[in-house]
Image (tube, rainbow, N blue to C red; front, side):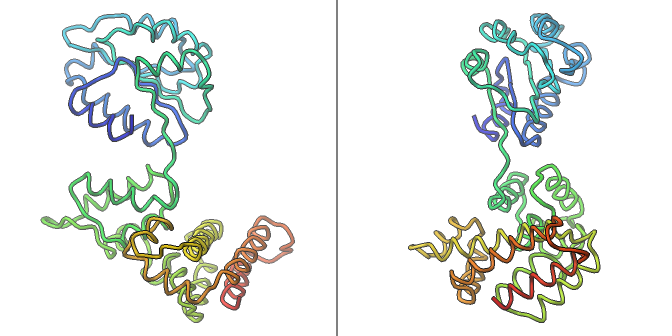
Length: 334
């Protein structure tokens, strides 16, 4: 089941007796757990029928014993096991998973650790439980995820606003959602669209000095603007970490390389292939005219060289700001 399907079923009060949530994106695990914790039982029912255990402080015998209890004056009991990756005897879940109690909703949060899907217990869970792998959202899909989240909350967002958030906040979904909720709270009465200006005003992003504007200047070969922005970045390294800037620019030039490889360069196909909103495709088309494939290969080589220098290989006493200025100069003159 997908994240959206699980949430939808919970909202419809369609429950499974076991939810085993695992993977590298804790946001989805926490959201499903929070949804179950807040919606299955009423506030008065929770005190007798909802418990939270921690993997390092419990074991499967105790969990099974609690799971086999019947709820008190309620249809269900909810038992949440956090830090389930710390359980030493997870294999013992198999016997309970074969015939779980339908009145118990048992939730496992298994984070930051790989599981061996070949174990029999996971084959059993696949038959009787929700076995959900929380996978990270690919970097080039973050803006789409933002747009979907906003839409699901009854709002809209301008493409530029979505791109600013995805390229300046990073790929950590919990952090993105925190910023979106701030924007949601700050929206004037009656307004339903998150605008670029709202993002600039509320998330602390400069309209002129941000990575989005830097890549736009590079794409247009606007040397004065690119140098002005990278100089500002160098003077404010805490606000504009070189590693983050490098990652975003590398992704940008990689997208231009993908565009050059396309046979079908229609707007919709190009947007889907390079992972941007159709709103931005024209900008990539213009940038592709300024950078042919040969130049892009050269730029990627330059960026790899400076990535190593930022990590201290062959950079001597040169600081990050100076290294980034050198790199931008070489890119602009490639």
